[in-house]
Amino acid sequence: MSMASRFHPDHDPLRPPPAPGLGRGFSFAVAAHVLLVVALSFGVSWRSTPVPALEAELWSAVPQAAAPKEQLPTETQPEPPKPQPEPPRPQQPTPQEVQAQRDAEIAIAKAKERKQKEEQEQREAEDKRKQDQRRKDEAEQKERDRKAREEQAKKDEARKDEKEKADKAKAEKARKEAEARAEAQRQENLRRIQGMAGATGGPTSTGTAQRSSGPSANYAGRIKARVRPNIIYNDPGGPSNPEAEVEVRAAPDGTIVARKVVKASGLPDFDNAVLRAIDKTEKLPLDTDGTVPRVMIITFRPRE
Image 1 (tube, rainbow, N blue to C red):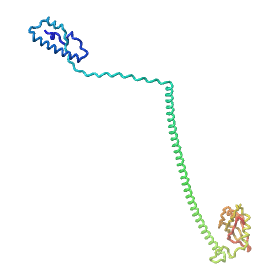
Image 2 (image 1 turned 45 degrees about the vertical axis):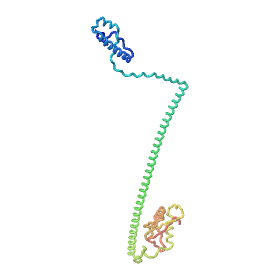
Image 3 (image 1 turned 90 degrees about the vertical axis):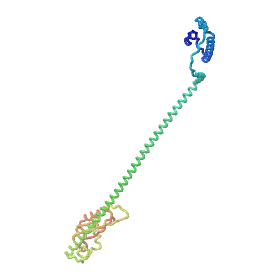
Image 4 (image 1 turned 180 degrees about the horizontal axis):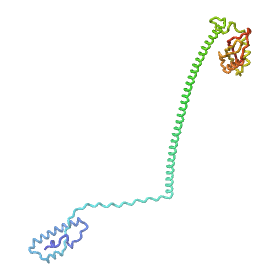
């Protein structure tokens, strides 16, 4: 039995540990196997008898390194990174620099706070301006509405006054027309009555006396002299001295039976004072012929 058959390469107790250099060791192993094969071939060719066990022990006295097991090539391990130089440590700031940094941060914070406060004040001012403008607009709108209502009220009042004036004018016109018709009817009745009593006037006569003779020249003055003391009126003065014409009707004995203003003076108080004075007079004086005209128009002025 040869040494190669007795000792398996993987279980050889004499096998040295693998060398650190795998490639170089593998090359040496291959060369040793080649030499071993050559030596065995040479021994087999020259020896025809089996080799005794003793000789095998002698063979085994010389240790032979077994060929290493075939291994797959491993990936090349990358070289470990070179150690980087340690960065220099930052220099510790001085107390003055620390204080300066703190002051700068405080200044920045104050500036930020001041800016926020200014922005807040600007927003509040803008809101106040908008509120003031809104109140101003509302006040102006209310004023416009008030003026519009007043203008409309004035227009309504003017229309109302115009309507009242038109109604009054219409009523006054109707009243005067009615008075004129009543006066015409009364005159007609007087003429008819006087005609039946022996009046001497013609059919077209407009007089109311039984005879056509009129009053004496100073009779009107005598009547005024009788009525004038009874006029109670406070004359306001002024350049004008308007006159009022009053129609007076009397009985044959001079008793006043009716009176009315046929032409107003424009002073209602004076006109009423004249009518009250005629009522107070009660009876007119007789004319020179002993008669009293039935109807007379007498003129009165505030200053006579």
